[in-house]
Amino acid sequence: MKNSNTLPEAELLSKVLNQIMEEELAQIPPERELKIMHDFSEEFVVSISQLSDSIKKKPPKKGLFEKRRLSSYLKIAAAFAIVLNVLFALAFIKSLSIEKKDSCNKTELANDSSESACDQRSITITADSASLINGYLQVTITFENVTSDSLSIAPSFELFGETESGWESINYEFALNCGEAVSISGHQYVTKTYYLDTSAVYTASNHYRLRLLYQDQLYEADFVAENPK
Image 1 (cartoon, rainbow, N blue to C red):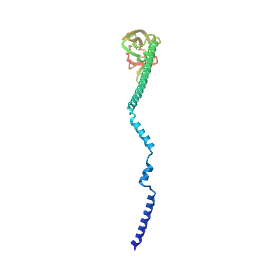
Image 2: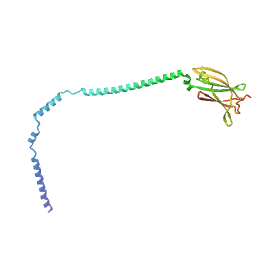
Image 3: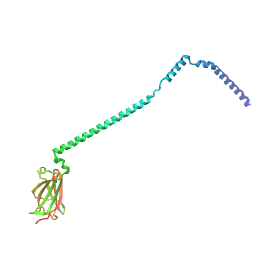
Image 4: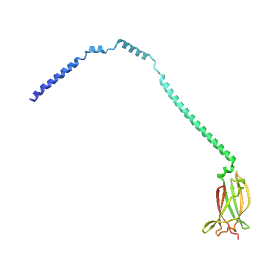
């Protein structure tokens, strides 16, 4: 019973679909009519043929790639030239600044030789305890790269004696004996000899420390002095 009921429905559906397809296909023109409808006109065909012939006869642009490559090379060369010019300009400016700095340094050296030699200035302090004259200890101070004129103002001295509690400042008496200027290998040496009254500064240890303040620089030296008495 089930198959007898469904079979007529399938046949009916098939008939309906076939009828719809026939109606739709009936609206499509035959092959010949379709060809006639879509054929191009003779004028259009001629114009297309002429255009194709003109394209074939036109010589190919062989130099286009070479021109583009040459243009790229020229751009690279121009950029490289700009970079070189900038580097040369920077080097020139740097050389000018160095020359200007050197000229300024030379001017400063010419104007004030004492200030230019300040960094190389050294002072050596020595004491000869073996050469006691009337109770005075000979103290020799050597100034390197210092002119005699710059020593027109006497250096400031400070004397300390070593005691059990440490270094203590003590009174002293200096007597200037002489001064001598010597130049060796381009270096200017000024030697000044002082005499220290050891009887006034006698300490049990005989150890002394002399501090010298010269042009805002502090120098010091330790020495031993025997009491002559």
